[in-house]
Length: 190
Image 1 (cartoon, helix red, strand yellow):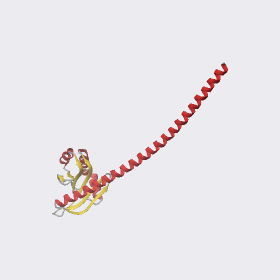
Image 2: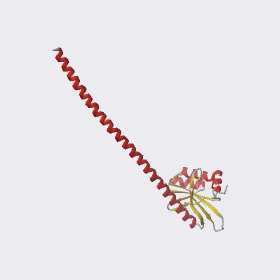
Image 3: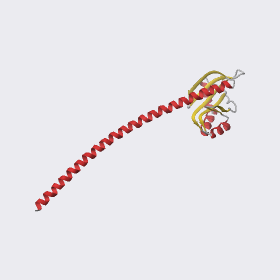
Image 4: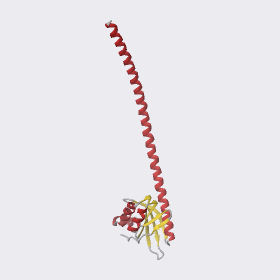
């Protein structure tokens, strides 16, 4: 009787072990499928980031092109003759749009513009400070863009604080509707 009960227990134990082995096999299959799914998800996410980066670059280029066109329109409308441009220039920071112009008196000036999709106070402030820095004006001149400078910012979407900043820092503000605020004056050459 004891032998029979032991054999039954061993039988149940063998069955439990077989069921456990089967459960382990199914778990390993699921883990394997999960690992494959995670790899595919990571690859899809990488592709998505890559596509988003290309879209962001296109939007930036499109914004800069729109800004260049609008600045050119504003300058011609104000009576400046465009001598060269639009250009962009990579110094310590990129200058999105540069035109060399001549006023009605024959003076050469350089119009510089920072273009953003969304324009706020801090962008205008940083740009105004950068253009007023001796270092940036010196690097501009070294690259053939001598002052005096007409300084502008462009925003596809300009929030109210950007208007406030443009007035405060004397920077011209342009949107897709044209010149909203004129520059307070010229920034002298370095």
